[in-house]
Structures are given as C-alpha cells and as structure tokens.
Length: 293
Ligand code: GLU
Image (cartoon, rainbow, N blue to C red; front, side, top):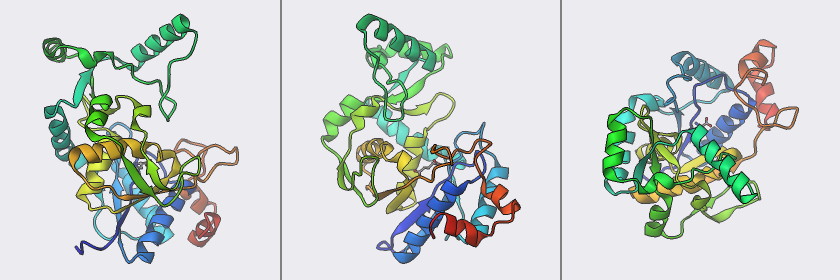
C-alpha cells in the first residue's frame, strides 16, 4: 500500500436494507476516493450479532454492485475482529480510563426522573438525545466491582471522560463537510457533551465508537465520509484516537437524504429501500440522479 494514497470507506451496519441515504453516502465516498486517486474500502459494522446477518451483507454487496460502487479489497467484517477491539479496551482499562458501570438504561431514566422532580429542571441529554449517564459508579471500589462482576451482574465499560480530557486537553479535527450548525474547517471537539460513553458491554467487547476508531486506524483510513447524523460522534472518536495514539482522519459529514415527511430515513420498514426501488423498475442511473450524481 502506498502510504501517501488516500483511503476512504463506506461502513454500513448489515441490519437491514440499504436505502437512498446509504446510496448517496456510498456514491459520494466512492466518487471522492476516485477523484483523489485513493482507495475505497467496504466495512461491515456487524458487532450487533442479534440484528446483523450474512444475508443482509450479501444484499448490501449486491445493491452496491448494482449502483456501480466497487471496493478495492474484501470487506472487513467487525464481528471476526473482536480481539482487536478487546486489545484496545484492555489498554484503556490498564490506564484506569475505563470502568465497569452497572446502571441499566431504566436506572438512568429513574435517576433522571428523580432529579427532575427534585430540581425542577430536566436532567441533561447527550447530542443523540439520550439521557446522560450520571457517572456515580466512577467511584466504586475495586472490591465491590469485582464482586458484582463475579455475581454475573450486567455492566458496560464506560470511559472516564473527565480523566481522559484532563490528560488530553483540547482536541479538534479537520471537517471538509459541515456539521448541523454549518461547522467546517478546524472544528473543536466537545466530548464532554457525551459524558462517560460506553466503549464495550459485558457480552459485546466493543461498541460502535471503539470499533469504528480501531478499524479506521487499522485500515489506514485517511478520509471518513459519512452522514451528518454522526458529526457529534466525531468528538468521542477524537478522544479515543488520542488516548490510543491513533491518527485522526479528515472528516466529511454530508447532507442526509430525508424522507417525504422530512425525517431521516431509517432501515425500518416503510422507508424506500434500494431493492424496492429496483423492483419498481428504477435503474441505477435513476438512483444516482435522485441523489445528485
Ligand atoms: N455503521 C455506521 C452506520 O451504518 C456508520 C459508521 C461510520 O461511517 O462511521 O450508521
């Protein structure tokens, strides 16, 4: 591999059909890679074993071939690389930057409700709209942690964000697309808005945030081109990169293709999948035109 050659990737989760939004993302990635004389990779983000399937992967590949999007090496499948993510997690645990947290989503909700009743204002949410994890278990003793894990209690590995940021100072990234508020150029990361994010769970030794960062580095990705819905996640990705000593790619967050109701397309039934459009008689050229290519 030529070190100076740019590397782009399209990284769908094979948990459903590709829709127009994915088509746009894949075509834009592919186009930017070819314009830059770079390589274009496909990655299957299939860590959620309950929702992802090989059948979906085959369909995604067929949809991409149909669109004329070709990738330069066999796709990386995250589910066969759990050891890579576990190694990164272990490094962070060894540094004391990650801790086991036992509060379930329901417990966080109950905490937030009590807070709202007591304080008369709502408990803060992260940029995705989820209630922030309160962080109280950061101070649990080693013995209690070990006991609860030994007893089989469910837990998640959370990043101690305050400690991480104290170590790293200010972080930023180069944005060649735009964020929701038009942020572009050198953008300051705001990871504290996410609180102590989950990096892995008891049953799944990684999370989206950890796996995407490890893979982008392992695959030598230099340009991350993805939907604007992931703009704020980049703040978390920069923290993980900095902690693990990994390079920061250039980021390009693109427009989202919205449904007729103005909402983001999802993989759930009802949104127009490429398969449905194809079966309705549209050609790949029609799809390319529909998303602006
Ligand atoms: N797997 C993610 C998704 O399908 C995309 C991850 C990324 O591009 O960083 O939404």
